[in-house]
Figure 1 (spheres, rainbow, N blue to C red):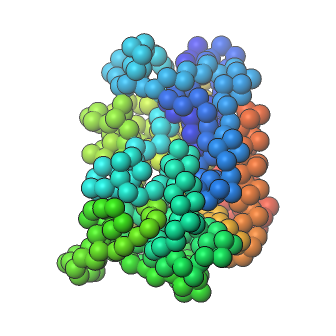
Figure 2 (cartoon, one colour):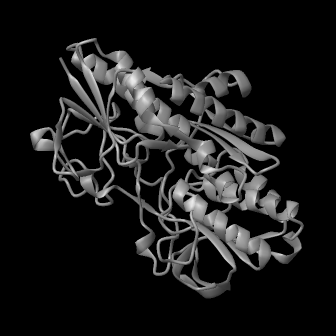
Figure 3 (tube, rainbow, N blue to C red):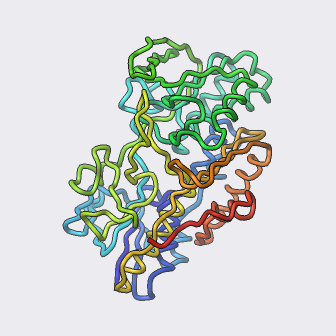
Length: 428
């Protein structure tokens, strides 16, 4: 009998628990360890930040769904992973032992790497967590009362640019609806070398589509930007040339700012030789398996992926929803194989499908594989993207409540986008 522990219950961890449960026998057990008993649908956070959703609208109590699937649910944070002992120490002093471990913790948000950055004692907002989005919504209400300049974007080392673009345009839509857009100059500040890079060197015509949207909506931008510090109402930004030299610093005034931070691995799984890289992300092979500790797997944002190549300012590679789904499905099959005495043979495709909602329209893109050169390199825009994103929210949360894990993105590619070349996993 095997005991599989899933550490984390976010986008990757929750469906990981469901899928691996389906791969195991009746005598095998699955346990989820997580610091938060409630799942929050992160893709909806930009809507929460402008008051289009409330916390209750994007939250799922995981305990009933886990119980329905026969999964043990422990809503206590991890203190430290001890891989040599096959044991996780919890913050309450108890330990959970495992035969197989799947790390699905998501990232730690590195706000502290920039003085004055972030919602925890800093001067910028975030949409990385529903708690942050609620704080951002309070600040948005103040902006409506006292309009002024807005700065939106992503700092150096960030690896998730889609939500920054989404929130930029959702905020712009909300300001137009409030009839104060003319009083709010908007600037997009990003570490990307060009608009629409997305950490992927662009997908289809994301550069042209996003630049066109910004011009049409009178939004200025600064690329290859390094945020030096943030003080009340002022952000100091250094522009970096293509050769890495400084083009000088600018002090940008703002009444409201939402900036995405760089990510790093969470402390309980960081600093372990052979398991994590210097940023604390978990090292895996093509089967999502750690080379040093072969009974440990990892899925989602916590996985170590090297950057695509040098850029003037550090830019990370995103882990998009479809990529995470494919990691999860491959990992579930591979653990199932090991429990049955077979070797792992499934490989996540790491393709990318993204729906970037702009409030009254949006942009979608598909990259197969995520890292170029690609077999599929497609992007499009239209009001249908907003409708698809709303459908995604309802579909995914419904599945989560029921304890089901049918892959959404592959269905989207096949049924909505008409792309039949994307598969969640492959033999390898």
